Image (cartoon, rainbow, N blue to C red; front, top):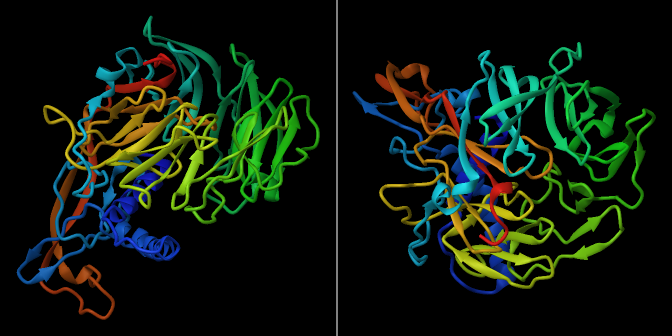
Length: 468
């Protein structure tokens, strides 16, 4: 499980705490009250996430350490009184929500689901980036965790991989690639040193067909606080945390600000929006426009009253419709074709995938034959809902492209288990401020992922026919 997945899981658990219906009343008052509660609930939910507390000999033990670690291993921090091993981490549905039966993506879109090796022949781990076509995947091969050594293309028909390039050695200590972007003719990426205080980033580009990468240049200060990148025929473009979009020619030269982009963030070139995922502002704020930076066209987004966290792709928007109903609001940019999806709840920052679909959490009873998905993908064009992941506690990944990826993946053979051991209760912190230090023996538990490592199940949304 990578850092992006960890943050998303915490946000989803926070969303779970918000699912209970609230009294109806004046809408403005209700929204203000709800927002105040949400802020508190996000903190409370992060603490109440799938932990195990045991009472032994009168001593209460609370496991110490970080809940998530690299690869899903680490000790649990929790105040939850119990949890069920392997239970799906999804939003519980209010009792009023109808039962929704979810079928696996392999049944809904059989042409879009397949398996690939989890590792290359030399043992390097594969990490999907995005789909290049309905039958081709862009992958990185990692020599160690998140250390990409190669870029490869995997053909799902021939089940063979072709090396596009060996990743260049930067010579920069602590350097990690942060995101890749596929253009019509080129593949670009950017990197930084995320584990130190340097405010620095650089950009690379290579032919889409393969070849030697070229370092375009580097930036420092505020220009290095990259949120997303894009690539055109002659430039690398990127948006920054505080808003604004910049361009750097592939031929070299100083970065320049793209005119008229104050407050804008890249979605997928040439589209920009007025909300950035690293903005650090109000996560409940609604997106209000989509801007085409090539034509200058501005499309205003119409959000219904009471809807929050509205996020839009090129055509469709998804938002928190819990003030309008029990679920997710889906609509087109102009507000047409809007409806509430009962029992489906938006996952912040992951609503738009593949430029057409929404990734959502599912609540209530679901599945057939014991199937419980980790998430669902909703297709507004067809109305189909497809389950992804297994809900057995194993992590669910998404491609690491800068633009909304078309790839989702998981390891069917991997599951999350709880391991506990008896410890001296005195080494564990009290459950709450002012409470006495636990005495006697206690149980410290940790959760880790076990098994798997042979194959990845991949959903390539580029392989979903437009009419399905």
